[in-house]
Length: 254
Image (tube, rainbow, N blue to C red; front, top):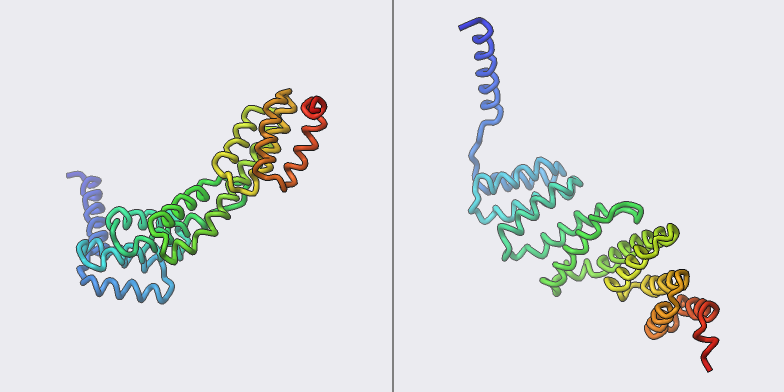
């Protein structure tokens, strides 16, 4: 064997020995691992705590502490603001223990991970949609839990957040005179969020576009919907004035 081969062999063996000595598997009881994880939690050493809690499942997958270790690991990652890893762990819990009594809490914690990442309306709203989806699942499946009650108002806030994003895009398309795409956006707001405070404005914006492109009949139809559903809205008053000045309907009305 050449000197180079001998050197490489010694180097590889030394590396493997070093790895085996530092990563040596240490078997411990589930309670011992759990207690160590709780110690790290009290010290706010979140990553170390998560590692310990996950170790329960690795060493004792059938232990009663295994599911608890998973959602505590999720909480530890959440506290560390590692939301991606938290969601991965929490999803694993939901997959492995769908009937566990802590599922409502886990759904709530998962929604908190998404909610923590919601930003202003100028940015992509993937996390907003994910938060709404998780919260709505929580409310649908566990309506009487305190977790469901805690997220109900947040669902409204987040939906308004998404609508504001859609309204911003629709107005930009209108400025660009991309009327077909703008109408589609406004209709999406009206159809998906009929109870939103922005729905009257979306109806008014549709009237504006129809009048701009000479579709008076469609404008009047939307005006009727606006008047029937939001008669006290400032947008109906603006629409009435706009329609009166820009269509022949009022002029021909006896």
